[in-house]
Structure formats: structure tokens, C-alpha cells
Image (cartoon, rainbow over all chains, first blue to last red; front, side, top):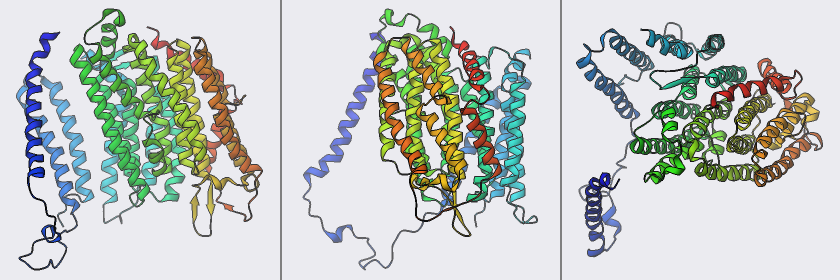
Length: 121
Length: 497
């Protein structure tokens, strides 16, 4: 059993070095610099003037929806690639299984189309 | 080709429901977004259609010629236990549907996706029951949990509901992560994922002194912790009161009845079948869980003032009871835990139909009861409702000759066979303590008086049907207890190896 774990020691050393390095980079700047907190330093920069308006706008949910839909259809495509390569070997049953998968995803697509998720105003 | 047909045959009900879901989804979205028809609200329509689908799939499942086989190259199993559990799930869901129709009307849940999600949740639960492999277990639990997260936050305008959904999502995703970690550890150390293969691998485990014992027990503990979390056993119960409180009430009922039977079947397969030789290890964990569950469930219910949290805590203590039945390790234990779950489900159906029925009318709007205070002097407003709640509470407290008493009796009988007197005494004491607040509710119904007369909204016919049915079932008017005990014994035979 001891033989199996010798390769893990490389991972342990890697983990130790990376945590050491990241903590050095993170904490060194905290301990070595002179700290004089000031209100002006944290305020927003608008070419020297006082800020006119709040820089934050409401996050549009459409971006999130596009990202999630991309994820789903991208995974569908990533399933299509290996299937298309081995289609010769898995004959008719492999073909129809993939068609069932595509039909289910198409139904989801019809649902989101008619619900208006694809409307970009 | 023959092999493929043997694979398809056991999951025919699921295929039926899934194809219907596809058709209903397309139908729902095409019609409810058509401007020509004026954007009709299809919730009631789809509700009736899904009721029909579930009825037909129950008939399909019940009249299938029983085949004892493992399908999809040992990913799914079909034995007598899964067969009967599938029929039970359909019956429970049909009972649940009786209540939701009125709830949807009153609370204006108008989206048709509600029913699509319910049907998909039923499919997920059927897959959980049949799963026989670590992969299938994880996939079906994820499937079910994702649908439940959406259902918990279904009422988008209520802050409670979105809070419940968010809490459930975060905690549930974390526990699914633990499940996956545990199963990957077990796969990494044994190279097997099938439950039966693991059972064969682990025979004679304590004697073997494997050096990977620590890894195996860690993996197994993680899987067990994750499943106990889903079952809301203490000390993993933190999500249950908040999620039960915030979700729409019919969804709370769905949460408290459906996963219990599903996760219990999974737990039985893991504990009694695969990891049976780890018994000296897991019985400590389960014992601690039982003590915590019963203690926390019983004692926390004292300070509750809202209905749904109260029921959440009492269901935590009921979970302690079914784990106690599994702990005994013998065949009577398994059959008494199944019996307890069935009685618990019917009691929950009854209590929730009571809560959903108790609506107060305040000219031109009516609202659902939320606080336990609303029970005061109910015996004068509606004596029938008062008697029904009395009987349900007595059944939960374990008073003969109602169903809850026999359920607890069978559990304790199977535990006493292993001469574990300490835990039995503890459990009986805690039951007595829980009697106190059940009787407090009954006292506030019958013996307290209120100054103003509250008007109750008249009961819906379907609600009354479910209330009456569960009441009659619990009080054994038709000798149903013998049928149930035969059913549960039959179901436990599949664990005979």
C-alpha cells in the first residue's frame, strides 16, 4: 500500500509551496508597508471632482440567463462530438439514444423561446 | 435486443411520465404565451392532466407483471421492495394532489410549470428508489434536489419562499458535494460502484484488517452524513425548519413525505446491503443521530409558535424513530421502519390537510392559519376539525388504538429483541415529553376561550376527502393495520440476504 502513495508526495510538496508563496505575497504587503488610512483614498475617482452619481447600475438578469443557456447548449455540443466519432460502432441504438437526448433539449429550447428568454429587448 | 427490452420494462412508468412531461411542457408554453388566446392561465388545466397521468402511471406500475431483475447493466434494481415502493409513491402523490388544487386556487399560484416540476420530481424519486449504484444514487439525488430547490422558492413574491429556496439550495448542494466525495473515496479504494459488488467485497471486513479501512470509513461516513442531511436527521437538521416554514404549504407537504421514503430505501440498501459488515462502525453514528434527533425534535417543539416549524421539528423526531428501527439490524426492524414511514406519511397528509383547511375569513379575503394560537376554541367554531386534529395529534404522540401507537410499538419491539434497553427507555421517555405539547394544543382547542368569534372559510371538497380518508386510515376503522403490516413485511423480504 505504501507504494501507491509515493506519487502523492509530489502533490503535497506542490501544495505546501503554493500555499507558502501565496501567503507570503498576501501577508508581506500587509506587514511591511506604512499604513495611514484616509477617507480620500477609498473614495471613487472622477478626475478630481466629487463623484456626481453612484457608479453602480442594476445588474441586468439577461446576462446571467445568456450565460446559463450557453452552458447548457455547450454541454450538449460537447456530448455530440464523441458520439459523431463512434457512430459507426454503436449502430442504430446509439443513433436513436442521441436523438432522444437532442429532442429533450430541443423541447427545453422551445420552452425558453416562447417564454421570452431570448428577447434582447 | 432482448436485453434492451429487459432494461426498458422496469422503467416503463418513468418513460410514460417523462414523455407526458415533454408533451405537457410544449403544450403549456405554446398556449400560455399565445397572444391570440389571451395568455390563458393553464395551471388548473395542467393540474388535472397531471393527476390523470399519475393515476395512469399508478395503474401501469401496479399491474406490471413482477420481474425480479437488475436492469441497465446493474444500475437499477427491481425487486419486491422497489415495486411496492413505487406504487406507494404514486398513491401518496395522488393523495397530495387532492390538497394542492385548493391551495393553488387560494394562493394564486398560476404558473403551469408547478405541475411539470412535480411530475419530474416524482420521476426523480422513482429513480432514487430503483438505484443500485453509487453513480445512479448521486445522479437521481441531484435530479430530485434540483427540482426541490426550485419548488421551495416557487412563490417569487414572497421573501420567505426565496429565503427558503436559497438556504435549501446552498445546504443541499454542499451535502451533494459530500455525497460525491464519499462515493469517489469508496470507488478509489475499492474500484467498485455497484451496491451488490460492494456488499460482496466487504464480506468479513472487520477481520481483514485492510490498511485502507480509514479511507473506506471516511467515504462511508461522508455518504451517510449526506443522506442523513437529506432526511433532516439531527445534527444535520438545520435547514428543515426554515425551509419548511418558507416554502408554500403544499410544497412543504411534498417535502416532508416524498424524500423520506426515497432516502429511506437508499439508506436501507446502503446500510443493510452494502455496508452491512461495517455495522460495528455505523451503528455508533446512527445511535448518536437517533439520540440527537429525538432529543432535538422533542425539545425544540416546545418553543414553537408557528405551525410549519412545529411540524418540521416533530418530523425530525419521527426520523429518529425510523433510524431506530434500522439500528436493530434484524428483519422485523426493516419491516417496522417501512410500516412507520407509511403511517408517518398518512399522518402528515392528514395534518397538512387540516392546516390547509383552517382558513380564516376576514371579509373579502381569507388567509391561511400560520400560528399555533389560531387553534384557540376551535371546538366551538368547527367541532369536526377539532376532533380530526385531536386524533392526528394522539396518533403522533403514540396513543392506542391509533396508528402511531402501533408504529412505535413495532419499532420498539424490534429494538428490544436486541436487548438495547437504554435507548428504548430514552425513546419512550421522550415520547412522553412530546405528549405534553400535543395535549397543550388539544387543550387550547377545547378548553380555552377566545373573545371574538373567528369565521372559518368553508372546507373545500377535495380537502375534506383527504382529511377524512387519512383520519379513517389512522383510526383503523377498516382493519387496514393488518394490510399494512403484511405489506411492510413483504417489502422487507428483499433484504433477506
